[in-house]
Image (tube, rainbow, N blue to C red; front, top):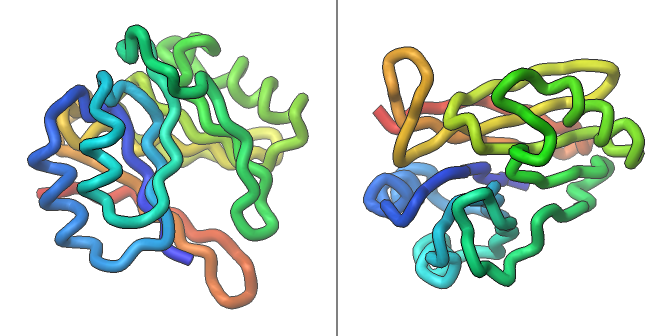
Length: 160
């Protein structure tokens, strides 16, 4: 299973379009918020199942604030992250994921990519493919692949 994880597109889809062409066939795309009302446009771009949640800039959105998914053997929490103060650290986010019995928590909001492992939880943030904020400011995303044995593998990737 090949899963693309993105966040914080903020109505700018050019990089998402390039990315979809680059990565090829996907089983699922996860968007972690701040689509700013463009979820239908994003769905038409990705051309596969899409899980998308609301971010702090998704005003008047009917999107869910969080979702819980099962991806293979993994229990996953999707959140934008702003309710857990992720700009100052991931501690509250990890605590929430543990309390809900999740293996993986995915978030956005910071526009900075990371893959961390804490207290038995895999913490993923794809950064932003539209407005990156990490050093070098390269548009980023995460590819998650679940292999034949059911094990998940994650890589942070850059559009250029």
